[in-house]
Length: 178
Image 1: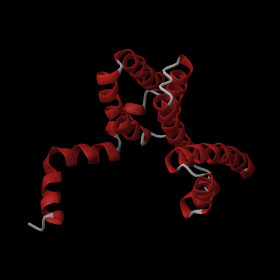
Image 2: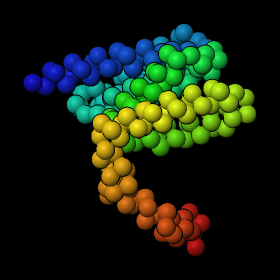
Image 3: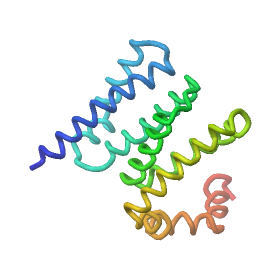
């Protein structure tokens, strides 16, 4: 029945709306603007299609927001606790098991954090990197084909081809007009 998938999506949507509200409140410093952010996302074409189409994208959105919320919690409160790093671990594992698109997001968000922690708090850097790498390792133990999806699938092959020199030609032809 479609209601199993829609019911799950509605439950995930409630969690996403709560996370989005807290993240928006942190950045916008306004309860009204935060509520408006949640309403706009939930009623947007992307939000509605994520809910109605029974696919992995709503769960992926949840993983993105949990990952972001954990970073806000850890760095806003300087709360380098085991609980927070465990939640970070689970967000990496959940995100990776949901879709491999999670890993570029996690990498580009984690890289500057690692540089920051290298300068400010090396003990926290070790805990941070351990939680990220352990989440990735658990993902590989549960679903070893992750690496095949990332590097061997048609998208991975396309990216590798582009990085081997074709990108320069595309860049100069389409962006610089040469």
